[in-house]
Length: 334
Image (cartoon, rainbow, N blue to C red; front, side, top):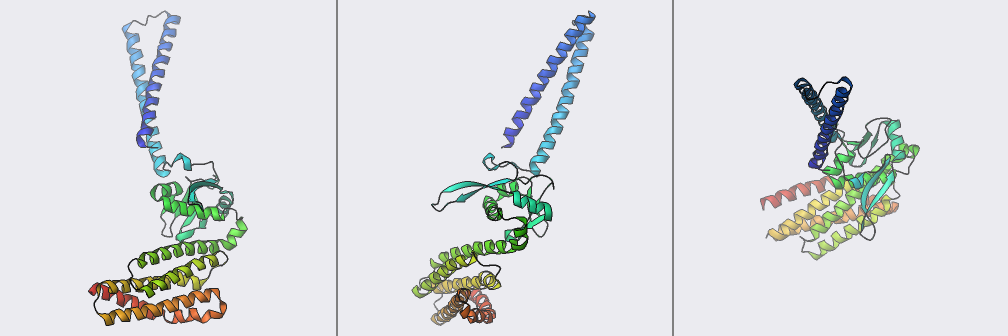
């Protein structure tokens, strides 16, 4: 709701209250005049009526101002959200896209999450965030569920919804995913659920980055290796649904794949702008070797017999990092 829409009813309330006060005072003075026989036309009676009415209006205005200030503080603490997103306590709503690409709203129960928060005080979330609740005995809602960072910053889910709707949808979708899990299950498997979701999101970002880099590469063989890597990322999504925490997968997604995208970016810059064929060929050779290592590491995730594929990538990690750094310097220096 807009601020103007909040203020207008407040002034209507003050005006209406003033009219009511005037009417009550008038009735009081008429009754008093009838019972005592004192005429209301006397100047002293008129002055008393006016004074009482003015005092009443001042008191009413002071109360209204106090109420407005308290409402402003409450709005700042719990900002308004779209009425379509507000549901009864212990429930949360968010938008999602179905398999046909249509946007829909989904409402889910927060009962199990609320129980977990009441027992533990806070809950780990995706993206290194922490979920807590204001008011231990209050039921969970979009207004009193608080999202915080390890550095101590904290804001309500209502604020997240207003400031970053995409982040709100992501948090809500994760809470929906774990909402059917009871407290004991969450105690033992929460870290696994967080890991899966974080890796799935990282995998989507990596695929988008590789698709974007395809537009800048003219070398057909390099393009085919990029497409092959995207396909391996898509296969890895299936592993996430069953896997627990896997440090190899974390390293592949968070460390080695970014190295690969950095080397592809370097090669793309040299391929477009550098006339030094020898330097281009060196960059291409390094890129192909990196593809071999990355794809072997993906194979090791699927087949335990290929375990050495990941070991080779681990052993080459320092070299890959140097290639990325050197390549960026070469692109900058032209």
